[in-house]
Length: 109
Image (cartoon, rainbow, N blue to C red; front, side, top):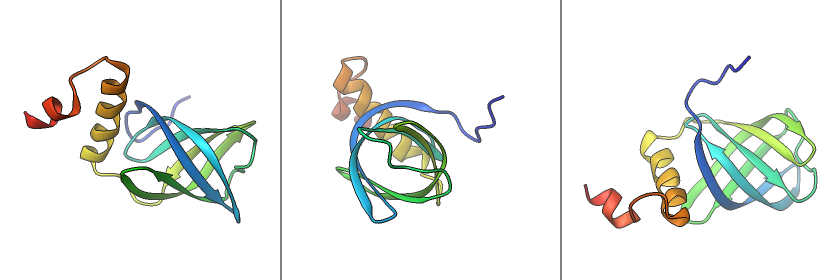
């Protein structure tokens, strides 16, 4: 059963994860105001551990790993993201994939 608090949006971003003194690259696959899913090259994130996610152009996102399965993990953010930040990430993903308007057009109105 799915117990998410907010809707997930597709996202494809390279990120850097910092957790328990280790850092690694990761791919952020989806995001909501309350969390995201990450995939790392090697399993390094464990349920219950704190994590800081760095995405270029966005402030660091702090959270806690709520589940981990192999190299994939779900993260709950310590503070909910503003809906405009989630929209920004989703729009950048759509524009990069050629699925939506360019960022300037989308934000202009």
